[in-house]
Image (cartoon, rainbow, N blue to C red; front, side, top):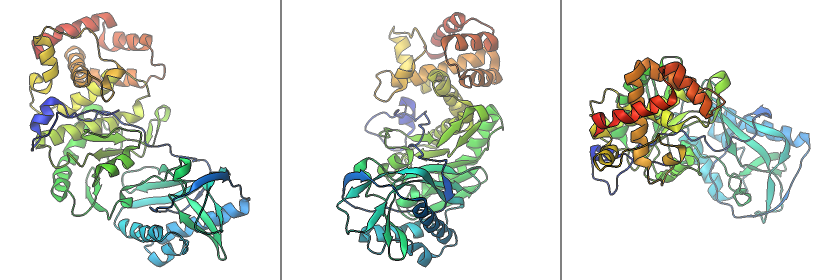
Length: 450
């Protein structure tokens, strides 16, 4: 789902933009994390360019898997102990020179990244198709491989990402041959910030910012100053029952942002995204959460806009472990906007120009926005966010800020997610029937936004 920077926010941008844009108010789940129930091993690979065509799937005995696990364990140990020679010794010397170079660059790029965990899991059964037309007649194998890594002070448990690795057997044993040769089969290796250049890390009390040296250096400082206050602001509303530690990524290019948030997600024109690896609402766990800024807007937002962007996205981070898929988007986005705007001193009419125009133009809304209204490209996108925020404000009118949080937790955390569940929650928390809530909200719009 993609959204643009809202009309008021476009006006707050430090330089003129060609079109109005909206803050991203959604946490797409990252690309599938692959098999995560295999044996834990260690390792990492890097970019390469190998053109191949797919043929058949190759199966190997357990002894081969054991050898590859040992290879990956040596790779990770070399990376964590910063031994470049040992790290490069795990690469096939006959591999594409671009891959070998990229591996060496990867090792350097990870220097300074605070890692508390770096490992792999191999699937105990099955493997990926091995391409045809490789550089030599060596014996190749592509067991399903999953990277597991954790950022120090951020991840309570490792996050998982799929790595489409191809291994080759040489006289001395198995070596890593490529991480792009399986592209033709539809299997892709996940790319982290370290795949796009040397990494720069700035740590603050409430988390860290990770990007690249020489890129957005001023923005690093600006967002770092804002991060602690943003986390505190979210915790003041949502509560402190979450990590209160956030990783903010500043990619150098839009292509890097696409890699970080998932290729199925439309990043065009969004200001930021909140992503997660996996979510277990039953146990209150969300793994691998990151806030990813859009490099095309990173340096262009005013201080007010930065505050609202970070607070909005960090609200999603805080609430994600309590939010089931399919929960009403008007409540999820309205709540995030409520926290984002809170304390901004922006008047409602300034923050919701589309709603103001609709009311003054004789086109008042008649219902809450639905999920389709929040999809990128929707004609109702800007208005949907403004209506969602206005609904959150109305809930606060009825039951206060704590009541809004209670409504969110009650509705968003219920696995049933049907109309009856929503109606029961409104009745219990707000003390009115849903139809009365809807009518009251609609009646509140002209005085506040008209």
